[in-house]
Image (tube, rainbow, N blue to C red):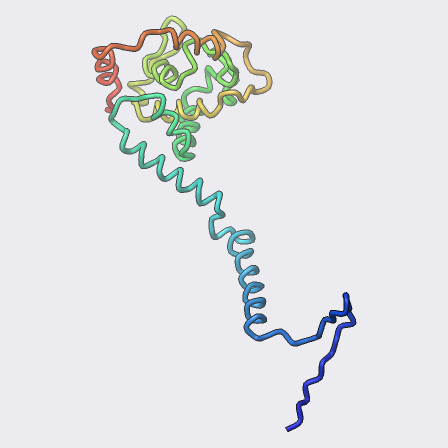
Length: 214
């Protein structure tokens, strides 16, 4: 039987080494074509139609779900800076707080939180403290001599937490045309809070009793 195979070179010659025009093996071609089909499907699934989550989106979603589960476990417990900051990682909680703010707070703080009757919530200055728990206590208990009403009866602890979570996300936004700074800067508050004595056990129990959800 005569061998019909002919060796064809591509004309590339380097140091006496020539490149032959050999047919690629089927397994290699199947791998190549499969990779092309997969790439097209991947692009359509993740980029064009947005059906699947990218790695960053999947990570953010896992963080959000974990934070939401932790928040549900924390409900009914003592409110802390950590628990309030945790709520800022859950968009649904922040969105709920934004809606409540638009319904209840814009008369004093403006729709963009720049301040009107009440102070600017987007700058670096605070009258009653910038820490999450300080914001929470201000909203819950109010400051009557400053015209800040107590919201614990109207909104309750859960919705107040949501509003505080939203306000926290607005820190540093410095909206255009905002009200002039009032109170002390965050740096000044940090020094003052660091020097303040920690609350005693009876005080903590009293705070927890006041802040139980209704």
